[in-house]
Image (cartoon, rainbow, N blue to C red):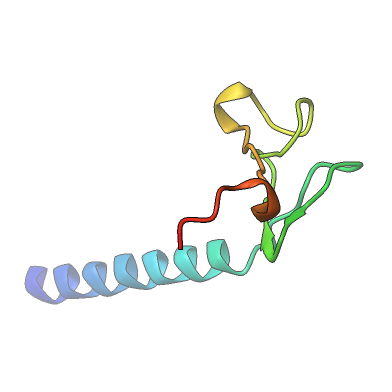
Length: 74
């Protein structure tokens, strides 16, 4: 009987893990209100940001450099 309970417990744990992963991936990333989200074709969700005040801290700041300002390496 203990072996059957252990198998059932593993199945419940696996279901809980799969449900958690599915729920976590279905949440839409959002930017902080009043902040720019896209950088080119890439969305930058909060806690990250491209300007001060739009990120949670300076460690989460993305510096955006337009391609037109980069040197040509061809």
